[in-house]
Image 1 (cartoon, helix red, strand yellow):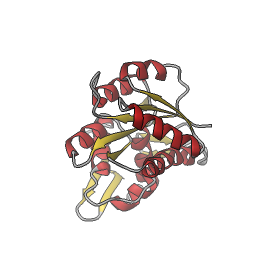
Image 2 (cartoon, one colour):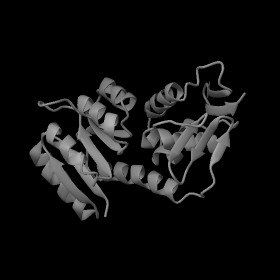
Image 3 (cartoon, rainbow, N blue to C red):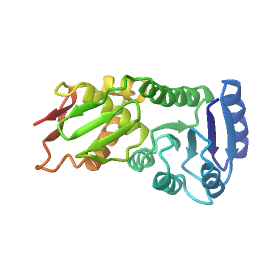
Length: 228
């Protein structure tokens, strides 16, 4: 059974959300202190983290930064509605997705299922690797190699790269990337795809003229990963 850790100083919300998650077939544990939450993550028994941004002991963004220094566990951020800066910074720091508060528990569960479904789909993918010049994407192992060196990616970054590599040379729309990479429909004014792909460009050093790979932004259409 998938185990989820909810880190949020709002105890009432934490208890309610964990109860709802259990009713949906998940194991769920709430932790009101982010420092304690990081200690719990060290056990390696959680498959996903739901993390609130606004916490007095330590901000959710600082907690996310520490999570990403140690783990690739998928993280769903809970952000204040309308606070686009926190959302973008959270995605840049490695969050897989976000839900603005206040929100219905059902919406959180839907996002959780989308994140886990994409990881599961990749795990059940054919064993053969996807090769594009110096880039190798291994769906079965969820590993990415560039010139033989492993590149650490978040779950969302891996999913999007897998979609782009599968359709190398083709323009993939943002709507298709959201559906296939994030497991959910593209929302109006959603910057998630742009931020994740900006991070991918940096991690894969795609701005290096010496690297024969290019991730093109096709205005009004989408993105294209190609071998020069």
